[in-house]
Image (cartoon, rainbow, N blue to C red):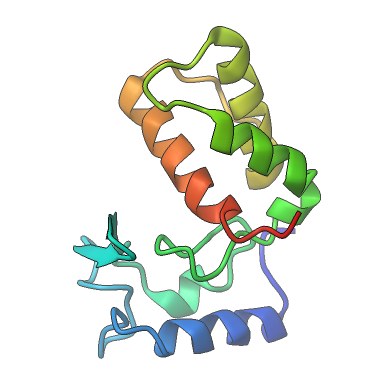
Length: 137
């Protein structure tokens, strides 16, 4: 399933519309490019996406951690959370890299090629850490 049901889409949009970073044109921060914001002492980046479209997609998440991918429950959330929070984004073993991209494949619903691009791996870990932070275990 690529899309969420209409109820979840509306819930996500209500969260977005209540966010101080939701723009008057319906995007998360500045359109297309987003912008840096500070949330709880952490510098994050808004996505710039058109939220009526992004909120419809099952694999998407809020870059500020206000709502998660619907696909997270498709994996063992507690195991994912434990694994992701244990990672050091600057030192990832080959075994951890394989496991990380296996999780990414489950979440996205498609086969994800393992990448050794250090910036790509770091960004993936940081994005997943934001998503799993709110999972109850």
